[in-house]
Length: 356
Image (tube, rainbow, N blue to C red):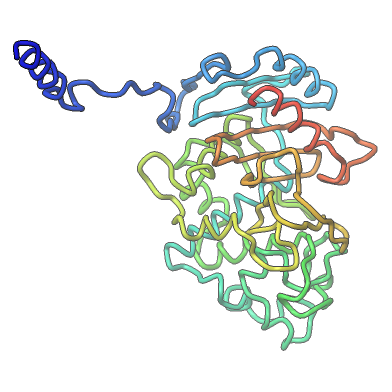
C-alpha cells in the first residue's frame, strides 16, 4: 500500500508540470530570419550546426572558382551559411543579373495588379495602346499581360531589339512558347498603369521594401538589373517566403504561387518568368526543342529559379528553406547554352555533397 502511494505521488508530480513549464528546446536557427533593411548585419549559421559535410565545402569552392564564379551564397532560414567572393569581387561589387532580373519584373507586375492598377488577364493594348506590334490588329488583341509573363505572346522571338517593326506575328497568343525580349513591354505596362516611371515604381514597391541596392539599365536591346550579391539574396529570401518580407506581404501569395507554378502546357517548366524544376519536360531559349525530364536533375524537385545569361542564378528550395545565389562570368564561354550546358547539374552535385 505504501509503495502504491509513493508511485501515485510520483505520477502526480510528473503530470503537474504544464508544457509551458518544460518547453521543448527549439534550435535557434529554425525560425525564419530577415536582415534589417539597412546596414550590413546579417545573422549566420554554420555548416556544422546544420550537420553538413564540411569536407565537401572546399571542393565546392574549387568548382566555383574553376567555373568563373564571382560570388556565391547559401541561406538557410534566411541566415547566411556560406558567402564567398572570388577574383577580386567583393560584397560591395555590383554585377549584372541578366535574365534572372525578369523575376523582378514579374513580381513588380504582381504588385501593380494587387494595387488594382492592372489586370494580367487584360489585353496588353489596354495599357500600351493599339498597334504596339507589327501584327494584324486581330492577332495583337489576343495578347494579354499574362501572355507576356509566360512567353506565349506569339510574337517573333528571333529579333532581340524590342521595337514595333520587329514585333511580328508567328503564332496566335497562347499557342506557342518562345523565350524572347518582348517581356520588356511589361515595364511599360506597369509604368502606364501606375502613372510612374517603372524604376520609380519598382524602387518604391519592391527594392526599398526589402533593402536591396542596385539599378536598372534600359538599353537598346536588353533591360538588365545590377546589384551586389546580398541584394540578389534578399530577393531570393522574399521569393522563399512567397512574396512576404518580415510582416508585410509585398506581393500577394496567390499571385506568387501562380508565378512559380506551370503557367501553360507547352513548357511546364516555366511560370511567370520563373524557371521550375521537377516537371516532366522543359524547353530552352532560342529553340523549339522539347526535352524530357527535370530542368536540373540533381536539384530538388521543388526548386524554382531565376536564371540569367552567363549563369546568373537564384535557386529557391522551399523544402530545405534554402536560397542559393551565384553571380559571375559564364561557367563555360564556349558552351553557354543555358541549363543544357550541364553547369547547373554539376553545381548541384557539389552542393548535394555538402548539404546531404
